Image (cartoon, rainbow, N blue to C red):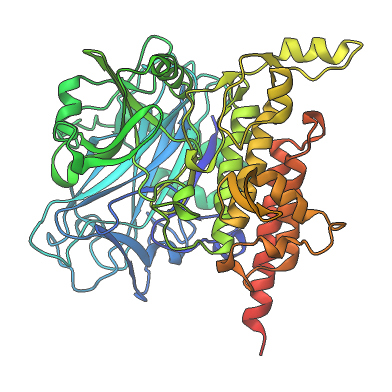
Length: 591
């Protein structure tokens, strides 16, 4: 048996590189911002210089000091959670790291609950009770069954902590670190479904002291294999953890749309009305061609509720039914950190409603221009958002079971969560691309034509690939073209179709054409600086800007086969970010 590290997170603390891990294991500990799902005002970071005292049960190589001296803590009467995409068909070892960092806290004063996938893992978590004092680390391990009841694909594991004492502001629930390991099957396979011939209770607290002592005696190379055997042995002898109280009033496990869709749930219209106070105008947060979008709450009351976005279709739209079905078909099969997650749907009494994760920062467009324009984003933040969107599109083109062409890439379809992490949204126009058999056959054909899907032209004006428009043959390079337009939106803070004055007359032109003119070094009196968002003047490294605009220009090449792939685009955007970060470091160290 073997273990594969899926996530290793320093909750509330900084990124820890392998050379700072403090052990011979050379581990990387990431920050938790990417995975955090919390109300902005309900959570804060605690830091301490308390001395950490390791023990025989939790030796020094378990986790570095920086993990145990920083933590996220809740304000009173609150909860927070972290979400991690995992492959179905396996068992997972979930390891929680705790350490009380305040010498003021006494036994029984900081008591909270721990949840795994909305079920109670610890009903009375008291770190002092577990460790016998401040500065003494402790860990709690559980095995989670992702074998039963799920199709092949990915599923979001949600872990959460919740306060039980609503009166004491300085006695909040805490979490210092988290590790998630995939447990291999009996053939040491970490890629396929887990064919165990036995069943494991969904959550079981695993005795960890045996593994802790053996870690010190074995080599790093053999550690994962032997630890995997210990984990499975412990499973057979562990005591069943009671399921106990669920987080909130409603179970969320497992959701499914049909026998083929295991990622969303069918909600009733009554639930939707309850979630939005009968579609109250005060809950309205946006509208579009499909219909109106509301902010809603499901799964409980107060802080136990989950905030969601609810998209309600216009009942008079004939186009809406097809897009509604397409969205469910596409998104119910997809899970990626940079794709908006479909939570569920409702189709009742001629209502068509889709439920998504709530994106607190709205659309990318809102941060660039328009009536909802927010404060200008810094250049590095813009690049990071573009990188996130590129990763989502790259996954659609290459990482999903079937190649998916989005067909409606634009700034209003890039949503931002509370940490400004980009999520690609709105799959109503998406199409499944040519399969591998078609690609192989085309590659062997004499004409060498790019594999495509013949389809009616659809998309948004200003973003539409001209080659797709002319030939009605769709490829993933059509998404690349639209993404190039989006990149120039980010640089210029202007919409895809703009008004300019030519020869004294106002004229509507595509941003892509206008921007390309200014990227052409042969055009006298025109330069990219002339169209740059004024809020960025003097704040961008010239190399970073050139790398960014060069790849945007390549995306807009008229011939699709000459455009870069989304993987190439992603690489160039990451280079542009590195160039800006290096320039910032030089500036910061300049005397």
